[in-house]
Length: 266
Length: 311
Image (cartoon, rainbow over all chains, first blue to last red; front, side, top):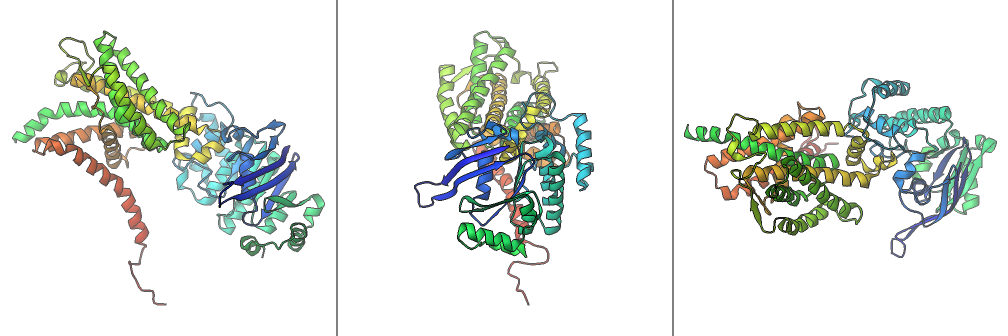
């Protein structure tokens, strides 16, 4: 389970650029929960994921993953517990390295890196099988440089890398936003498949309201660094976009304004 | 005809120098290409390697042990730059310059004065320019050539290990590396150390080869290293895909650099202008990929600059 208590973050405090990104986030995730996160620009969605991942230190509060307090751990140490996929397909993979090398790096996440071989024959065979499941033709290109892949292929590969070594928590930061609709759908399908198969706790940020409602078993909406809507179970299944907008207005006291989200809601 | 004879005569010497500097250039390759950090420590650590080796040899130290200790001295110099960058947040170029400057004093202290010579007639040495035309194992072409191949084999193995892969990933993508649990700061320090170890090792060879170590022997070393990397990539980049071959191409780049320099001198080029020439060549080669991308951006197929659109 994941336990976030009263996490706050202000960027550039005391300057003219001061930005209160998180105003006290409390979030508890049980086993098997797949949360979709939606909210306008600057609502603090990405900051929340970055706080969990340890990209920046928190101002106050605590983050506990499966009983381990990670609040003060540096990013690379927390990586042991986390699988991450980013919005920019360039971020999640090493472009200068081969597909199999990227996977081998991911397979060693959270383990000591020694002077043993960076990739074994046995692994190669495994990766081939795993890539076959993605159905993107990557299984025959194990030694191709990742830089040669398309954005969708890279995101699918990053997803595979994030879950190769089963994480305690999967963090998806608008990982389909940079893809064309068809590829985005494919990557989202793969996401659901992998999450279900491994029964992963997942937090997925999306700007697509329909996806946010359809995918996962819990939905939260953020506004000005706070969680303002939290729906789960049966209630979430029956949710419509109109209801969601009403709930948002009722609890945040303001209109939901995000062009990106509104456009993709149509 | 006479010039050609002169060139051929000088060829073994140029190739020997190229081989020695090739080790140095491989060090530069590790920081510049693999870590994506231009490290200027090398100008200082090259001389440190020479100074340490010469002083140890003068004091009767075993030759290979002296080489090894020079390598260690280089590792330490690299560690200083690495920590200045990662622990103290100093940009890598500036961190390298700071270490390079302080090494100047340290090198003076190691040698006690600005230069120290080792005479091949009085002291046993691993390599010497006296032997470049001898048909024997101690010919620098053979000794340095074999050492270079061993080093390439070692690096090929190392960069294939879990640790080596993590180091390459750090150079390729910092965000991805951290997300995959790689301590990127540690790997940066490790890479800069390894690089400077090789550079100092190369300096130790050159000091013996030329019969002296000098505090200024590393001046402009980074430019020679970059030139070797760039020449190697330009000439062999398309055919050498394997990592070991790419390291070899850097060494070949260094050899070609020294042959070209020798040719230019033989043809009567003012030797005082050599560094200017080297810097210019490196600057142009560094600019070519940038110009290429600019050209490609501005020349979209089927349109010309300033075309009017007739809607």
